[in-house]
Image: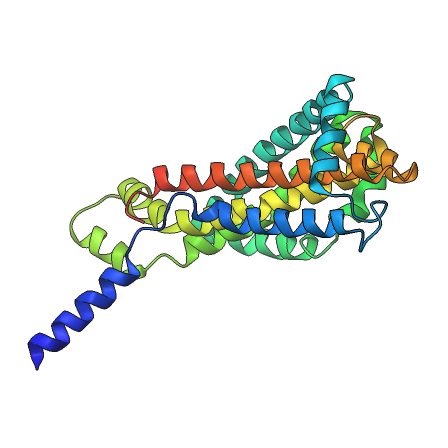
Length: 264
């Protein structure tokens, strides 16, 4: 009886741990694109409202040939990468400080949780008033949106590290620096990466909002421009580009997480 149970559990574990084929992530996207193409070609929905994927690709190629696409992509990538790096790095530093220091926690957390609920888009007119029209207010807007989820997740990650691990490290003679470096930081990294992934979506949202309000170039400005002209295919090119950028962000963070957390 015991042997039968052991074999059953072994088979179940083997089933749960089986490797997913490399092509599996592509299946869902392929299915959605195929259905989208069928609907677009069937004429059930007007191309004005939902152009087919092939017509969007054709519009994208036309924009590439005419040189309309790459200036907008480069402008958006510059803003989002710079804003993300600034907001993320400052958020991690502040979050670690809040988690490690009782003084910083008591002074900083009321300020942090007072400003966090404010919609960052609502601050854009004020930021433009303070910083003028240019790249600085857009980058600042993105950095603000990234900062809050990262700092909150970093702070939560540090505070929720298993205290038993910390006590064990101290018991075996580790000094304060080693406890921070070898116990607290590795223990909080999963939560920090969760915050970074959450911030990636927020950064795209704020990028589009900032470019629609105060930019001549960028994917958000391009979407607004072609939306006003009711050129849906080129508008959808911008939407698809945002989706691709978001996917690249997610995959990059997954790669960094695997490198930083090999035990996961």
